[in-house]
Amino acid sequence: MSSIKPNTKIVTITLNPALDLTGHLVDTLNVGTVSLVSKSTLHPAGKGVNVAKVLSDLGANVTVTGFLGADNQQAFNQLFEQMSANDRFIRVAGSTRINVKLVDTSSDVSDINFPGVQVDAAAIAEFEQTLLELAQDHDYFVMAGSLPQGISPQLCAQWIETLHQLGKKVIFDSSRAALKAGLNSHPWLIKPNDEELSELIGEELSDSQACQQAAQTLEQKGIANIVVSMGANGVMWLKQGQWRQATPPKMQVVSTVGAGDTLVAGMAWGHLQQWSEDDILSFATALSALAVTQVGVGVASLEAVSAIQQQVKTLPQQKATIQMQTKTGTLL
Figure 1 (cartoon, rainbow, N blue to C red):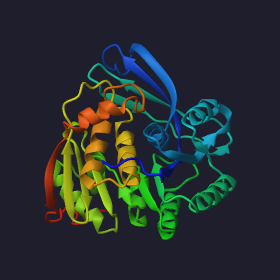
Figure 2 (cartoon, rainbow, N blue to C red):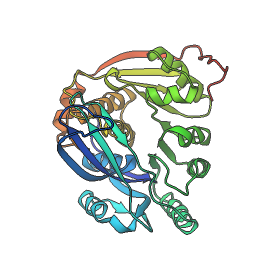
Figure 3 (cartoon, rainbow, N blue to C red):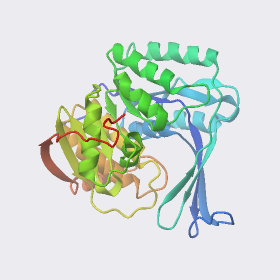
Figure 4 (cartoon, one colour):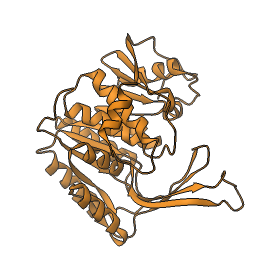
């Protein structure tokens, strides 16, 4: 791979950040009764914030923006200072939500996600002005996570389209209604997992071929890069009618929290560095694989990433296959 290039500027957008309260259960989650936690952490998060943290560790010049509750912003302020990030978050009244993640002894994660702050018209106008300012000297934008109260999927999609019209590359990672609306706004890269693809088409996708066929319909919407994450089964990447696939080595899983965000960061970093497609995919896959072996998001050792990357198995490129026909005849 080539050395770091001088242009490492990127913007991450977290519209609905959270303080993640992660608890590691003594055994399993006991619904309706008491569950014991052996250890816990409380740290600033949200998908875009997680992406920013990983990118910062890799050496990117990160600007962070979105909406942040003014009443409990201290932990975020400290993180952004540690990252040397350019903080362009819009502060709004109230407290940023606390999300609960319970990790059992099998490393399965149960998420309890709260709705987030209420965003008013004045905050929206300030954010839109911030986006336009950042678009003057940034080419890459990562918009990741859910939407807070006051932000509709249609408004989110409008922001993606605005950046697209300005010639910007938008990496979009969301789910449910926000993802469905954003697909029609020309994001440059999306990263659905197999469950999110399944939800989009309304039926279960039983294997990687079914995931490929579902994803291929999205390419017709003008989405240049479609990255499908499948957990331990690896990553598939559709670009210009060609599939690439990478499978990580078997890892000792501690927590899967943040692994998908780490994958997004790896894909973004590889493109910033102008690496080859194969290097980008193997690096991002290795980075995500390393993430499941630790608690918390970040890159402590690039040497460890490189060692895993050497063990990532890649399949030869293959052309996209025949489009999938769903029960309703259309994907969306």
